[in-house]
Structure formats: structure tokens, C-alpha cells
Length: 146
Image (cartoon, rainbow, N blue to C red; front, side, top):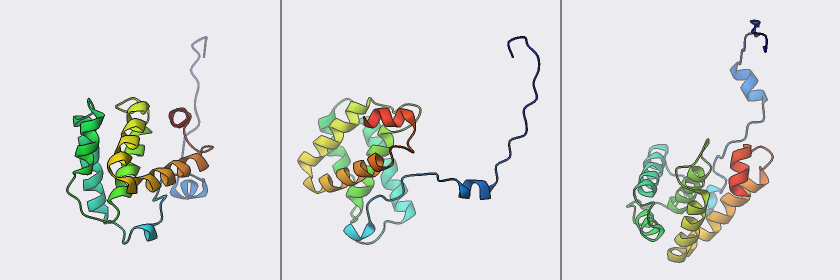
């Protein structure tokens, strides 16, 4: 390559069977549904996640106001706490870089528990989920969790 000689790369072919064979780890409901009732529908979960993300982006200047606004999202479902926590963790571990510093998300999680203590168990469960899969997580995400 240093001399400018063109090289031919072999074609890259990836089939669905190849993907199924790999042990890819994604965060899929680390907290069992049995802890909080029936599963939230996909569209309701998407709407809630979108509201949480928009709220965090809008109120990122003040953690105090951000936590109040996140908890005031008008969704009445048994899985509300779980989805909110998973969304905050998801934003914190966004690659290549989260929109806020990781410390912001940790402080947000910590301050949310001061207003709603029922979220402590969800924060621990999602944190333990990521820690148990540290070997599979992207290096940048691992640094954020460290």
C-alpha cells in the first residue's frame, strides 16, 4: 500500500445464517417482565423512549429540571421505570459518543432515584446486565461504564 500498488480485496459476503451463528449481544430486556406486569407494546415503548431522549436533550443544562421532566412524562404503565432506565443507559452508551458526558447520565440516574426510589432496582439490574457482558461490549462503551 505504501508504494501505491492497487490491491484487490476479496468480496465480503454476510448472510443471515452467518449472523445467526455469531454470538452477538444486544441489550434485550435485561429485567424480567415478571417484575412489573405485562410487557409494554413496541409502539408504546418507542414513544416513551423518544420522549425520554427529547426530554434529556431539551433539559440537559439542569439535571434537577431534567429528572423532574423525565418523571413527569405522561405514561401510565408498569414498565415505565424499566424503559426509562434502559433508555438513559442506551443514551449514555451511544456510539461513537453520547450527546452528553457520561457523568451527566450517571448523575441523572442518581438524582432520579431521589424522587422515585422504585427505580433503584432497575438501575442495578441494567448496570449488572452490562457488567456481566463487559467482554462483548464495545471498547468505548466499556470505558464509559468503567
